[in-house]
Length: 136
Length: 136
Image (cartoon, rainbow over all chains, first blue to last red; front, side):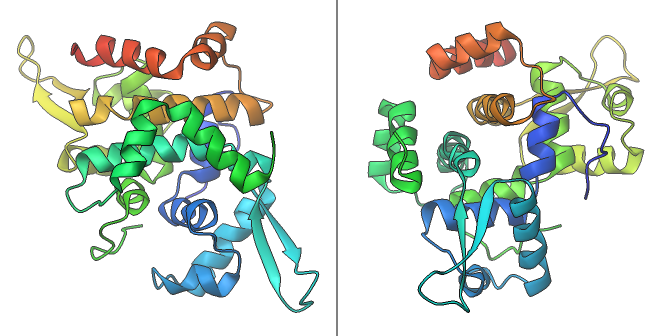
């Protein structure tokens, strides 16, 4: 579902248009928390359809949330990585994980996650962003 | 798009299945930040299709994120309100708003929002949850 192009000015509309899609959230999780970088890796775990993964990656590239680059060491290999804009979604993802940990009986969040997050969510987000994006 | 029912155990999958949809995010914004409670109000601003709004509200009721109740004062009026589970999405929504404020040139977030959020996101989330859900 595409948001209307005249839905401008509202931050939730903007976020909904850029990442308001279940597959997009799962792909961002793979990049942010599972260290996945390659197209075939995104297909593995959830048995996602190739065209869906290709479509969502392409939209994320267009939105400047991820970067698509040829691997310098292996010229026929494409790497996907989060941009700074993508890394800055970490606080929202941590909040969603904490929410699911509270409300999904199936979700198994490690105790270390919950204790670190609930003690200081901002510090945890910064730690992960530093690791992901090598920024200060 | 429905997530596969065997996608269990991952908190981002869970959140993606429950709120990973652009219209759902916009409806939750209406309930959380715009004080909307009635079906016709959800249709107004974004010119959403009736069947989409009905479908998404119904899914949110099924997920226990919102409550559908007959208005005690006007028996032919239905009110939608956030449950505690729905109110507990506030931290994720604030994080998304802050992200959009950083990255969407069209987004106009009041300076009071950004300064309160960046000073102490947890305190701001708690303040809003208290107002929304009348909980301590």
